[in-house]
Image 1 (cartoon, rainbow, N blue to C red):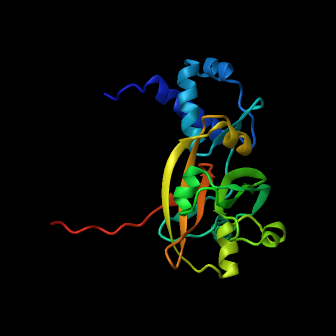
Image 2 (image 1 turned 45 degrees about the vertical axis):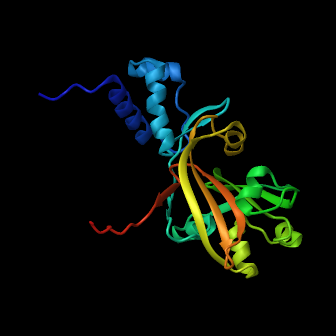
Length: 242
């Protein structure tokens, strides 16, 4: 005898059917109306909706409602090789462009001093920008570098969104490796506003440190990625048994 699905599972299945039948950009009914339609509580419905948000199939917009999102392409990235979003997007023929760009010159914070092996008060440049795909914000990237590393004219006239690609084109310093950490985080107010999502929505956070061939850290980066447009993976060898 098959087990009866829970209210959450039933809501999840009915919500999935609704998403699959709805065209890209469809605005869903309000939470009270959906809860009444599916016969469940708003709390259970909200929990089911969060799962589809984490998959990039739904997006909540502050003050506007919840919309169906169906990415035309998914950017797949292996963590073994460091490549820019622009390079990865070209591989899957997804057009990405840079949205809002902010360049801020200041002195290194305590965290930045530690990450970049700087002295207290050393000048740094923080480059934050939005990456768009399908005319929607899908990533918010923040890079912090020693201030003298990137000539201002390159940032002002030749920057298209990738600090990595810019450093590679410069050829100096020579880059050697990158250490990265990936985690799931809840969007803080500033990030949520930048990506036009709700505060607390789930994002992928890729934090990285880029090193030159002398082992010096030259770039501390944080990439907030919208699930559904990005699939991160890693190939691992099988270890020997002692």
